[in-house]
Image (cartoon, rainbow, N blue to C red; front, side):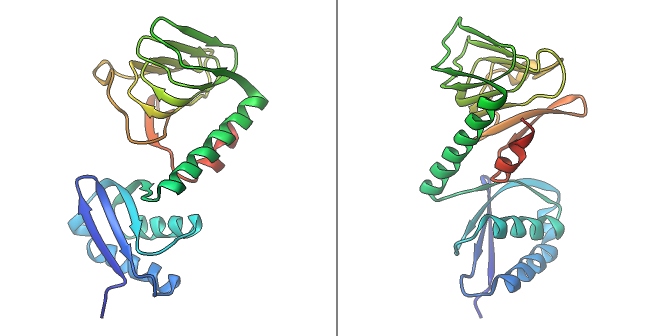
Length: 220
């Protein structure tokens, strides 16, 4: 009998192939059993996840992630999507949500910042463009870059909670309040796709933006 769940691992992450004919409730049970039985093999690890074989709703995707993490020591960093149209739609929705929030609480800057440019904001700011190497952004609130971030960004310049978000990050330096990236991270790409940087336990934490991020954005 064909297995309902097939797991394939690679250096890039993990792919889980799902049988499209198995009822979803049974599929969740099978996923839990599969990962429980193989938990020693995987050990404690952080991985990206790609789901193939059947069409899933966001709620179903989250249930699958929960089944994996509840039955193993795997930390799923993000779900990678192989559908280019869905990726584009997700990015468009993220852009619209960020712009809506900024119109309520912050400012906009349209255009890319080049080497030597300095942009300062008394609130949160959304930059519709890139922050190139040698450019600087300083804001008392959050900094959202709807493009590539290669320069220097200081969010939360007045202290307090803030985040830095960009669609792609290889920054010269990131700073939130009094916390900043280490010298050895200068110019290093911080991950694939949209990234959020925040302060947790007295240090900067870098995470990929998950699909649930549109709900998480309410605090910005």
